[in-house]
Length: 93
Image (cartoon, rainbow, N blue to C red; front, side, top):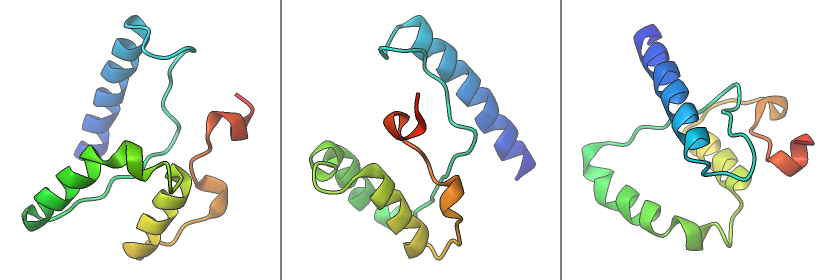
């Protein structure tokens, strides 16, 4: 698991520089301190792809935060509300 975390940290650093160099956001982009990742089996690839393709429409009905909490519950992951993602307007950024 340590190697996977190191790999993801390298990925985050590269993406962070690219996003800022390309000015893809209105303000300086940075990753939050924590992150979550979920894995699905190969048999679910089509469902996940369909979800990703319809994500923009889906998130008009369900907020990212609510959906993230639903996923944590679905995967039976205990969490502390203090460490759930904060949107920039909620975090005073």
